[in-house]
Length: 247
Ligand code: FPP
Image 1 (cartoon, rainbow, N blue to C red):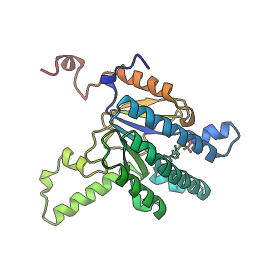
Image 2: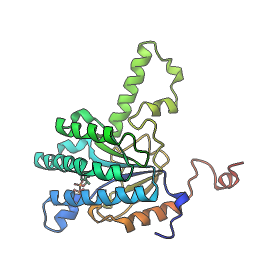
Image 3: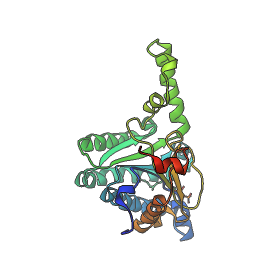
Image 4: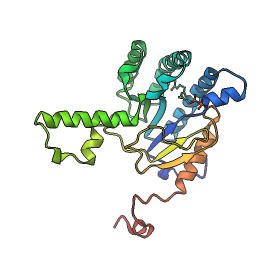
């Protein structure tokens, strides 16, 4: 931990929390036990990121495609989510964390939607880390939704299509107002983006680890941050140009 440079931590960290099922199956346990352990990891990582001064933490908790999982697993995940939201409000208030959700909130059961609204409302005045859960989220769906809303404005004569640029398009996404992630971590050895933050990850550094999400801990997070700090982020420029920057 000591070798981390606080001034070079990512401003926005995004995480694909993968491998709960495999963690459980390896131990001859039910998949849901893996998700339960996964929630414990969420707590640890949220608290550690907040302690380290990360400003934005975005976690992929349930994809738009996860609805296709067996009904019992979906139900169990929703129950865990509800329990998490109820239990975490207190801790979020203690740590000054602001809560947010991206994705198709209206797909979620009404009781979960209520818990989400409550958590967002209660934590709205906090000014620490912004914790965003991606729920029923899909990157392509988000892009289509943004395109539709801009097209509707153009059709209504309120917007000249020529005015549409990257900034405006980005402001039409669920992540409006947030900086793009600097670092994406995916656990469990899979090396895919899986429809997560497709637009926003354009220049993110990608970090993949074999560790399953339930086993991901503070040390693993520090390892990911150290790796991130060893990268050179060029944004399409040359190393030479970067050295000459901020002139
Ligand atoms: C991937 O494991 C994990 C998910 C489907 C989502 C992550 C969910 C949690 C960490 C628990 C709920 C979260 C909150 C915030 C309450 P997997 O089932 O795809 O694992 P596998 O690929 O090994 O099957």
